[in-house]
Length: 217
Image (cartoon, rainbow, N blue to C red):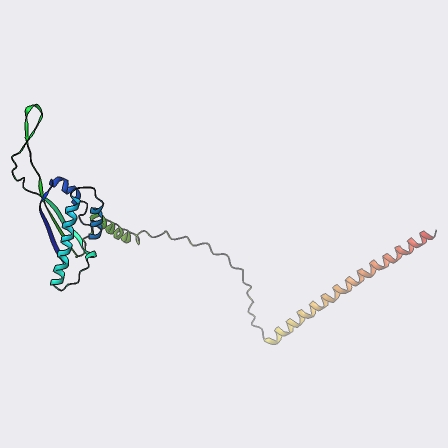
């Protein structure tokens, strides 16, 4: 939905009026009204009235066409100021050195169009989207360098059991012989230990007897 409002023969030069109307171009309606409210220029008041008229025209056209339009969704699509008539005033104003200047009164025409269509993207937004797309395409190309595989730790040498093709009975006999040899070695070790302990005990008894005889003397 689009609506237009115009103000003609507004008192004031178009150059001064353009300084104010450039502030609201492309802005949302609510933001534009806030800007005009706090702008300390004479042209801000008439421009605000023209903007409110454009908003009212948009809502009226929407009601006629049975279309639901939220005034907060409207934004300023176009706004410009044209030069008005000077009205050909014949008055003169005194100037230095006996000269005279003709007095001219400037007038201007204001035109504001609001719409509820989707706002086109600005150049900055388009550049930002292009940069994001470029980064997204370049990201898969620049993959992280593959990490070098760490040297595998040497596994503990596995004790391989020799495969014997001998029959089971021979294996049983060899195992029994090995066990008997181990038992005999254990007995020999225990008897040797007992003999050593007895030898040490007898030596100690003899030394003790010698010490007692020496004490008696």
